[in-house]
Image 1 (cartoon, rainbow, N blue to C red):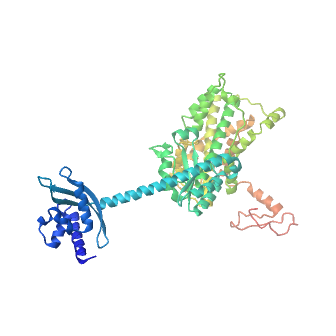
Image 2: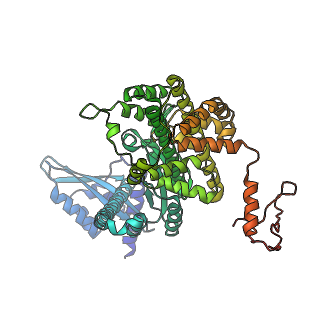
Length: 569
């Protein structure tokens, strides 16, 4: 580039910097003024065509194009120009040019106003880039949605083939469609051991997993359920507002949903919830059996009994719906309840609870009996045949009906306390086994609303753990100790009378047996250990020696000193 052209370019850049950045509203003949400054010509030199031969070709083109497009009737044009300085810096100028004409229509002068629009253009460019990025993401999202639709259709067509581990198969179908950090949520009644495994597996793939228990049934779906999430802890902040927003609310709008713990903790707590649900339903069914077949109440009378119970300590969803069931009539005006086949179904969560209680070594006697009671009910044909040949006491009652109804209330209430005490024992053991930090009071709050076992009773459990977060058993809390103590006599009368009259009450009686066993300092397990050592050399500990020191006795004189080698065998 010729020397004078380079100098001219620098003059133009200097003028542009000055005008656009510091005097954005100033009007001047920008290129013309730079030309005059370099050639030391007067402003008059710019008038007419004498200006054109002196400017650079690019400037000349701009001016000529502008002159062609203007007239006295249309003297203004606007243009945005991208300019690269000799330093390499890029900025944009909006030029607003005006042509001045004399009375005869001859061009007298061209004036330009330069305004720095660099920030605007950068924003505009960024917005365009953002829009393009959003367009690409929408295309990718549409692709993934179409792929997900194909996955769901595949599941629908193949669900019979993959039902043994449907969640695992769905996960495998989803993984290729997901990005690092995406979250898979399992909101079904999955086994907590599967959720532990799935959390580990999906995290190894760079994904997050939430296994969440959901309880509430139809009413929960309409008005908000109880939600018990666990899984990948770093996934919780992303879904917290969503989960707590749709969950049931209690007290001062407190959601019945909070983080339970890592991996399978959420599904474990839901499993225990379902086990307690089994227990509550069995206890209420046993109460119904006593009221109907022993006390001799009709459905209208039982409706009133359950309605009264629902206004007191037993206020709960299950008592409430039992009240309504007692009042419901079929099309012929007769109670519908008596037309329903007495065979109870189950989907497995109660059985899982019973199995895991054995794995953890927790005496979940009431819930286990509730599960077994459903199994016994399923033997309908066998029971029909047995009823023809097996006899028992006559089911009749000659005492004070009102007093005994109150006794049944207290027996149900005391047994319910045992059910929850056992459930919390199991959660405490699981927290130690699986290294979970469970908030027991918080769990009670999650169950206060939305779920099947919701009741005012749960508020007292929350208070118990607020009083003592290290509480080992609800029965040791002052409130529940007093409540069970007050109900104990009625509880024993009900179980005894049920036994004497041949009414099966496996949940109530097992709850009472657990209570008596738990309150005894010494149980006959010493004989069990003696028997085990006798036939299997399993050894035993002695009360007069330090714990952890094991002994074997040669009971027959011929067994020798060899032991089984495993105390837990």
